[in-house]
Image (cartoon, rainbow, N blue to C red; front, side, top):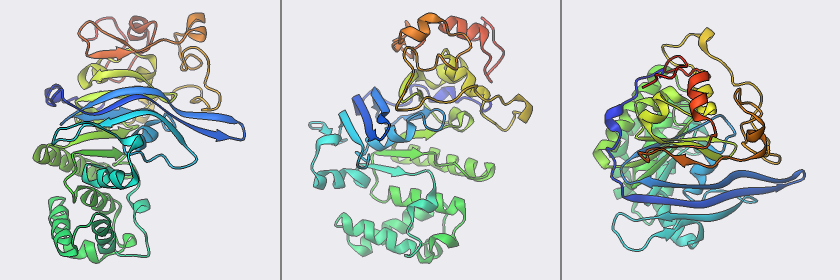
Length: 356
């Protein structure tokens, strides 16, 4: 990989399920027809793990993150179940079907989200302090107790609480905005943190600093993280498991070392070539040919077959299902994974049958 894969993280998380996603789809009715932006996905998130969800822009990653908090806005229609298992035990809660009052409690207190662009999360007309106090008010937390926790959260992220709380969003750098948004997400000590492209738009040094802080925070607070990114090098040393999205569904899934060092789906292997890492030259970066599918008109058969260098007639006619290997640690939806490994290079090494 373009960044070292932290193989020691594999298996760190428990096998206890904290989020269970079952047969979830998201659709929009448009003038051109029904757009399916999440297509019947199922996945378990384990308590204490970092699950990385990777794929090109428009693959469905952010929509997947949104459904974990029932955050798909109208006119989007969500079907299926997202079950949340509280740390305290008891019956799981179907996030897609709870009352607005219960959902408000789950958001931030149980599951929090950090969105892609920190500046878009703050109202430029009000101070950062007001963003925090408005959040406390919505969750019936006193201003004094909430602000004390806010100061602690900001200090944990190496930010000056007095300066940040008195500032407006335009007075903060990109890295400060993102860390402030992270501090806001952590004020209620949630169990699950959804991070939607948290390092996008940040320079390399700021990215590395933020990732290091996230790593430390997860260890300190036993957080479960769902880390959404198009950038394979960012997640390489950070994830326990990786789910690869294409055409609004998962096409490869498993332990991080398996997926990032020995990918078997043609899309994952080509995606690794399209990522620019710190030790990859511009000449080595290769764009995946063709265009991602239109959500109104996803190709029949394997949705990747129109861009795949090893596709044949079967791929155009028949859709492969996710199938697990013998160890049950690696799933891939491809009829020819061995051919993909043999014929399609990836950034972890040359195409060969002796990848380890």
